[in-house]
Image (cartoon, rainbow, N blue to C red; front, top):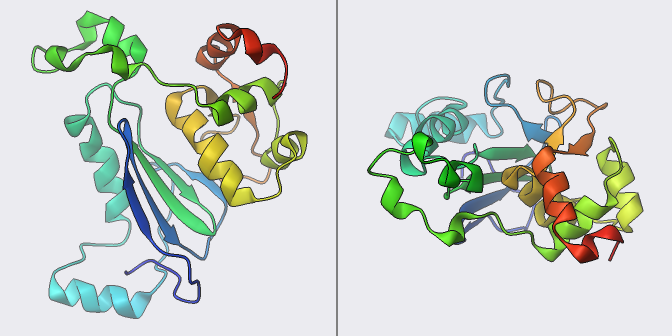
Length: 207
């Protein structure tokens, strides 16, 4: 309510998946791309509404949402990748809720309370969209280059269906992680992404 862009008819959504929770809200971006929680400056989208909600006790302080999710997510999902926040025409928050396969297989990283939760389902799944993205990436590529190579024109569809899941799963990483909104930002495969690509026989040619 406090952050959405009311000139947009797009709905705010909260979707709970088996391995993550995704929240999307119409937005007027002050930059585009992933947000680094440790190096970002919050900007009030609706100052009057924010002030009213603070007076009601329903709102803490500017930027507290990103900060609190980043702080408390490890307590609810030990071993899971960190949350991903994407600033664009639709602000997106992706909160992973299962641990990565590396942590699941390394018993030394698990507490006794976490161990019983380890099941084969914790291995990140390579969706057809993510698999297609992994095939396309060659070296370091910008978002525009990736979309052009994949023949995609809808930026939001690309971020939501391809880029965000790949970043959350750890298959792709930013080339400038300390400046996620940089106009020079590019993306490349991680060692995990390369391994996932090699593990799929059909991953040698684009779909």
